[in-house]
Image (cartoon, rainbow, N blue to C red; front, side, top):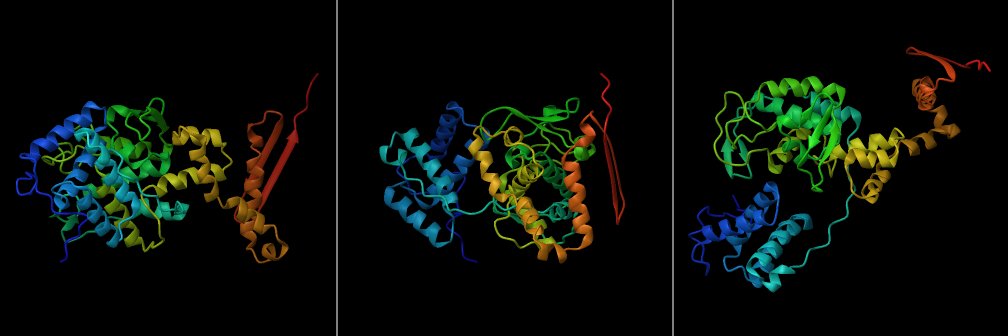
Length: 377
């Protein structure tokens, strides 16, 4: 099997690398201390250290020529600029650490433009309701470069809770992974987010349909994290876990997300774990929730970040097309009936005290009554 340059083959003690630094293990440890002293998040520090291992495995002298050759190899393998920019971020941090002027300004590459992909309600339901798929084969963990025992039912249930929270709260995967038991406020029905991408604490509502799922999940925990890593401490009832990260990492949720897509036969491009967040934002906008409320729910610092999701909404375009006489004549009557019901409900008359409102629905009909209440003067 051909070894990919992207993953490299970094040695944990670095003693085999031909590098002018006498003790690279100590160098990496000093780099870690530097990052922590500059208030970098634990997850960010971990990413920089893993990136540094990869770069050092291919660039033992950390010269410009070696790094450029490494990046050329990665591009030839088909790696995206997003991945190269992650390495570039580490190289820049290392440049500040070593006070290397060239590394400090190592150039970022232009991000590829691609459309944020969303999932339909049916796809999300199928994804979350997918039954446990028993496997007799060990699975490969790209992060640890090792094979593990076949997937356990217990871990499958943990992923059900993880993805359900994402789908019904719009939280980022890293935010869900960093949740602790103490971050759940069932009284206010919110998740308290302390570790976010924007470094700004926030809250996300707990959807009513996941409250019991979260409570049941907590019952099986013995540690502080909701989603401990299998390699990171004794945190799940009856399972000893030693070393590694304390919480699930991006490789873990990426691999299991695509494992389920493969089982379901969903082959659409650009689908990622973030598609849950994209779908959540799109449904809010299609339900006529104001941009400012969507911005608040997604915890964006800038409204322009929220506006990006407007181009994903298609319901208004579909509704417009259905108004064409030729299209409407070819549309199933039940679809038209459902559109009428949605239009009526969009006025939210039941919340207006000035009206008496009544609507009755069955499979083939809808009956709607509304009366203005008498005003006594």
